[in-house]
Length: 199
Image (cartoon, rainbow, N blue to C red; front, side, top):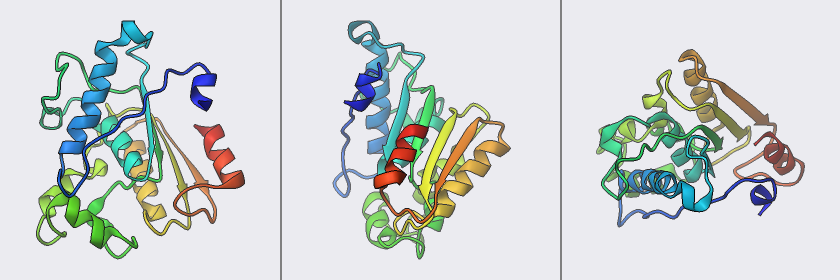
């Protein structure tokens, strides 16, 4: 409602969940959503060249993944409107993970959650951990990105945001990062206001 009141067309995307549906099903779903928006742009008065994506935690990961894999065919899937591009214009990543190979021991639930989504732990499914990490797909063609992350995040370590910021910067991609001192996984009060303002 807040975004719509500021003139944005807003769409909330649902997607298939683990453990029934493992990576990359969820990637196919969010890319299909972007392609659907572009295919129906006239109907909903959307500018197909100005689609931004945002999400928090797992949603932040998906937004970031969209921002770095626009032209990677293996992640498009076949969920419709394949003549359209899944490229997005910008990303707001709210404390989403960037490198799953370095999540274990740094996140209170990585050891429980990641194997359900990737078909095994790091030892059993290393390739999927690498493939599903946005950090490994950054190129100079990545979408401009804003990263919002708290320094006291127990679920997605603050350094995950730093790694993403630095990789994007190294590739010449416009990136900004808002660090919220002492904030955890999810923003409240003044932190929520700062994050919203930055977005």
